[in-house]
Image 1 (cartoon, rainbow, N blue to C red):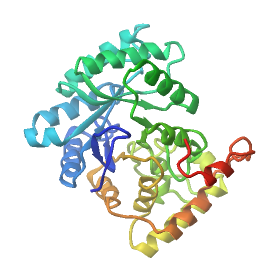
Image 2: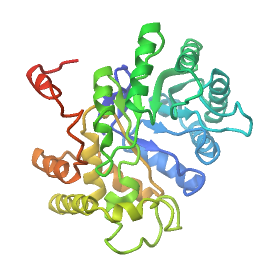
Image 3: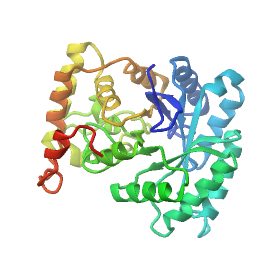
Length: 344
């Protein structure tokens, strides 16, 4: 498996990350352990979880598995988790305040059984907490040896830039990654977030790279979904966006191109969709979310798959979200960037 630095940090991670949102619910503990075993065997070293996944059970399963590994395996792994969402019923059991994050971090450390979280990410913006309070928490946590790198998740462009600017100005730990939704059916982050990440040196950790299963080819036009999904046996789960996406011609155009390329290459549609994301600008590692070892095995087949320029161009054209000209393509937006390569 290929490796890249975690954003502008010196930490090196595999280009495919193991997501654990299903652990403890759709995937039982033996199945979760089998996934982690197979992922490490394939050369992966980045495992991503969160305190709210299955009401902390995901972290607990990862922690119990880590405790059973050799020191060599544990030393190779980069563990990422998140804090922000409710961990209790109290008014201070949620958000990005120093109080909540301090308690949430300590609880995650206990559940995971580690001395430090390699990448601690804030799960989304908190409109009630000044971002300088959150950054001071990170400064203290890094100084205490509890966190090695700070990361963001589900931030907008202005929120990311405000956070980075303040951290740089104050000399506090600057976030090294952003975890957003990104796939062939959800490319809107290219308008603001990817340029902001490129400008500031943040690496992307895309979640939902298969668009909730759409890009595997499992859904058919005018046919309601049936059978199991990544999020369980109930076909209504995991396909909440089935209606809107099924009515969009763009969805079927994208699937047609993905299917054609997969057939020409002799690979699966999922592998084509993952390969497209892995090689996008600023992407560090793509988060895989599998329900079974068999699904994970298929996803891992994308580890050494790279698309040709022609294949990428065909996928780009079919999946173009059609951004408005202004302000993204307005006066001066393209001309100077083309004239001065690497302009910041």
